[in-house]
Length: 131
Image 1 (cartoon, rainbow, N blue to C red):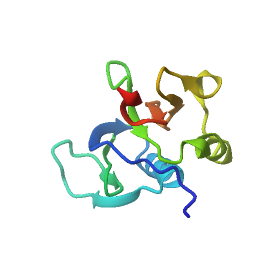
Image 2: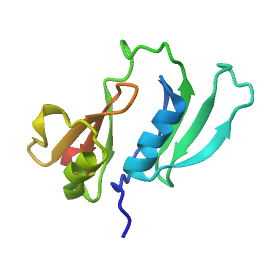
Image 3: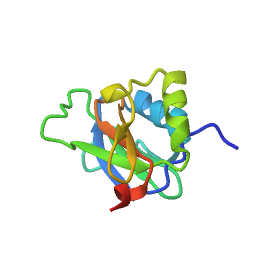
């Protein structure tokens, strides 16, 4: 058994990040995401970029040290198969858990965290909140 949170669904999110390497390490250590494409060649934004993830989820990351989350993504969510491991894994990696821990909903629970660029991530017990 691996030691990562087992995110199981989300296709991809394309996002600006403040520090590309720090962000890659965050997702690598928390979810076991791997670099799928390391593109230092010129791209349409002409900035360093990487695509990371697993077989189900891809994050397309473009470095912008001056980025501001204002007007951006409110949050994105991952279903986590081993939901009960979230709190221990976050404590182990010193990842801040928002709202003092799991938030109870009608058919599910969620834990909210922030990545190094300030994006909120919802980690859900039941995919789609059971809707």
